[in-house]
Image (cartoon, rainbow, N blue to C red):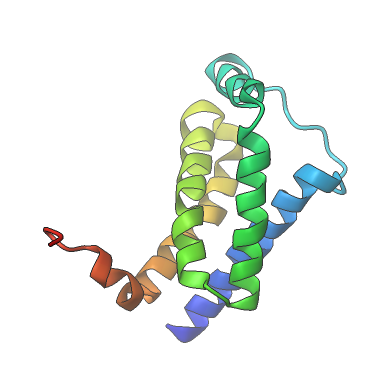
Length: 129
């Protein structure tokens, strides 16, 4: 399991760091796809909000760095999980041609959740006192 955690942590950290930094530095030469239908409407709404993408990409960069240097990595994985889930759902339900990226994010995130369960167990209490 240690090797699985290591590979998952490094893969997830690398993906989030690279794609987060690309938003700010534009070093990956590609044209973002213009998504038709509901996918385009959803993305346009997020872009129109003004704050959403810079906030999300900053979280991705910081979370990716945290995973790569293994400092506060379990909390970084928790913070990044909703982004991984949203990427999976977006690319599965609204823009299915990109489903593989969602898998590349959600699988290592889930594996880290399993491998680091000892750190998360105390959050799952029936009733806080």
